[in-house]
Length: 209
Image (cartoon, helix red, strand yellow):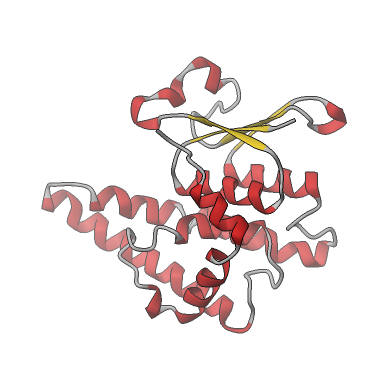
């Protein structure tokens, strides 16, 4: 049975399509047009009470019962647990995956997201302070990631859900006004991931109208 992916074409949505492809799980896309406010519809709020995409419904959840999961980080952890893929079993190996997944969710997502917002404002006075603040922080986070990748191929040594989470946002680096050539380790990591056939399928699948 297919997992139902309720999402839109955003970095957080792409995290999940990439993971589903890499984990070879069957899924169907159910677009939630956030520009039209579909995230506030009662049917969607039943599976995502915070009115945010993505959310999934797995008809074959724990004990064979249907389950819904919202929040992209929670979905990645659920899928990793379900399949036993890209989420190490041992606590020692799991720690860096959790660290870098939380790093993405707490910083490398919210900060570029704020930069996106201010870059889109038309009034120069309104946008100037926000653009500087959030672009500076976004570039700092790219630097953190670059240093992490200086001596390893992936953020937690082996490929994991943390890489998928970060990639969903690094995919928008041009929109962040960030040139990956300034972060050579990130550039190498990004190219490696984007060359993977499942990652390519995860980005190619239509998530919106």
